[in-house]
Amino acid sequence: QQQVKQSPQSLIVQKGGISIINCAYENTAFDYFPWYQQFPGKGPALLIAIRPDVSEKKEGRFTISFNKSAKQFSLHIMDSQPGDSATYFCAASGGSARQLTFGSGTQLTVLP
Amino acid sequence: DAGITQSPRHKVTETGTPVTLRCHQTENHRYMYWYRQDPGHGLRLIHYSYGVKDTDKGEVSDGYSVSRSKTEDFLLTLESATSSQTSVYFCAISGHVQGNEQFFGPGTRLTVL
Image 1 (cartoon, chains in turn red, cyan):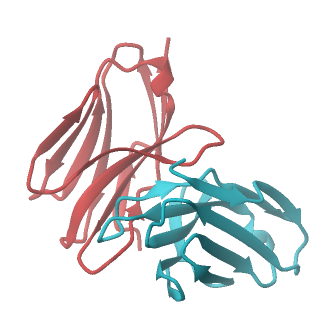
Image 2 (spheres, rainbow over the protein chains, first blue to last red; image 1 turned 180 degrees about the horizontal axis):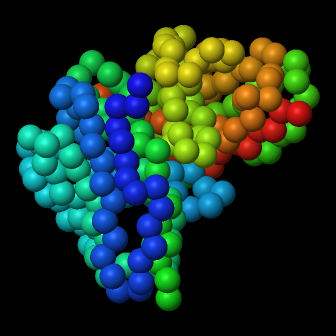
């Protein structure tokens, strides 16, 4: 049972554009929502994370928007750069679980 | 990679042979995890550990076993490898009280022929 659904599967954006990746979750006990960035041949790297007591968190060009009532959260990459081309994963955890549940990933390509 | 090493980094083996992957951390973190990554499936949890000799199953634990005899080492064993276990395996660690702020190692690419 997939508890975190991620879309789109792939995304192509022009340099300078905004990249938006969406995730939806089912488990209302989730209270921690990170995003990971993964380059080919590397392990996923923690990019940014949010807890549901805030609706938005920004770190540089990366912003997480969180909608608790809709059980959705999204990653926005402003002024997208070719170096941002990577696979992005959303994840969620909470309650008694000591583990993360991951979305299926989005392959982002930023064209120069 | 947050003080995490995985060995070997690449391995090719044959169906039916045993395989052990090692994860080593220098962060003294309590939690350690093994994931597998396959196209279209993201990262799926195989097993995790919340302390020395304390382990639990994840989503896709069938065919895998783990051991943790020291804080710094977490071993993943495939008792009898099958072609369906061809994958990239990642180890992760967490020092967070809930174990959810996780940092990943570089991965091991395993091919079972």
